[in-house]
Length: 475
Ligand SMILES: Cc1cc2nc3c(=O)[nH]c(=O)nc-3n(C[C@H](O)[C@H](O)[C@H](O)COP(=O)(O)OP(=O)(O)OC[C@H]3O[C@@H](n4cnc5c(N)ncnc54)[C@H](O)[C@@H]3O)c2cc1C
Image (cartoon, rainbow, N blue to C red; front, side, top):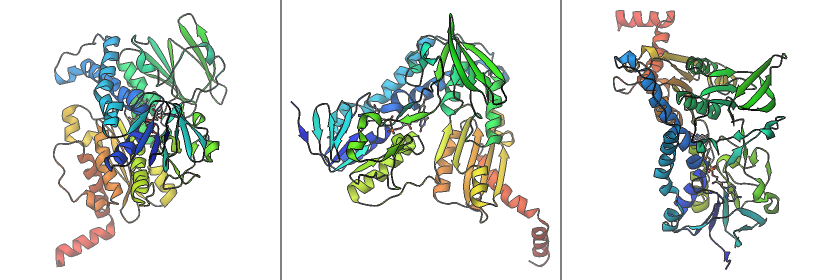
């Protein structure tokens, strides 16, 4: 028996963004309907952040065993039971899944409809035979992997983030197409779990990241035995008896042939729009996503779009941040604007690569003159004790000493992302970052040391030295 539902809010998509909106709205006693066509928890829980980080953790443990002798502990090449690694990944998902479950959300008072949602007019969504006329809609339908139309790709089995975590047998030789964060994270995890790995990238690896830090990160991958083929576009894929062969060409006509057992495509993502019939709802959109204003409202004022589908940065923490903005508008009519000036993004390689705010190149373009302060990880006592001395921190400050960007490559740097996102969101200056007690010995001290170099560099300037001398004599 199908109903005509008239909730206050209808959320489409039960992933990172949609669940946050539904939970917050329900907590305020608002009548909410949540529509989900696939697994509760969306990409992050089922096919993205959670399984990838669980697999990376398994790879790290294997790597630690292979490199233990530096601590005086016998190193071993561990036997890896790939199906047990698969079970570990599944059990991490299962441990988190209750937070995102239908039972939990129904317990919060949300009506959950397990079906695909499709607009039939500007005010009505149809899902599972129900008609839903909500006061406001929030579209949080996420994104999906793009499969490029490479000749021959239809003849081989293509793995994506939606299928790779289902493998129970280790790929002998994983060929990854796409050298962004997703491709490289999975490349390193598989390499450490015993696969041979080749990554092919049409442009530059980690092309959005600071090139100095990216170069060190890529060297670390090569040292672990990952083959990196840069600036080569894949022009053809052929099926072979033991897997596939891929032909890639560079702009100057150079050709590389890569043979492998499995193919993972991590070559970009496209927003999940098609099923929504957005034209019926008069919601403007293009191939990047739904067009929204800074308050995440679409061309239909009843409809908001958040997370990956909104065409901006694609991270779980962005989807959650968007959810907060939408909730302020929907429940309290408080206008809020998405501001990405302190947005952290992390590439979970080992060492981890963190970017908060602008890179040096972006800062120079936007601000002209900037101060760049660096500190190498090998000058950090904790890094020496842990034998994790690869990396660098780069702080970028504007003319007035305000920190506008930080790039970090260091073991465990993702945790430093919290501190730096707070620092940038509070518009801190370099002097704020020297005027606190940093616990010793921690990796995080690299930030304070970089900040202090702002003043030590200044003290070396002749005019400042003259002032200091004057103060010593007459002060
Ligand atoms: C391999 C990988 C690793 C990642 N690692 C990280 C990480 O470490 N940190 C990080 O911050 N981000 C990471 N991300 C990105 C992160 O997963 C996404 O940014 C995040 O999931 C986006 O949340 P969302 O709510 O927009 O969409 P999703 O979480 O994908 O949820 C969208 C939901 O909408 C449903 N849906 C779609 N269309 C319809 C419809 N018409 N009707 C009903 N339901 C529909 C889908 O089934 C899905 O469940 C990773 C992504 C990948 C692929």
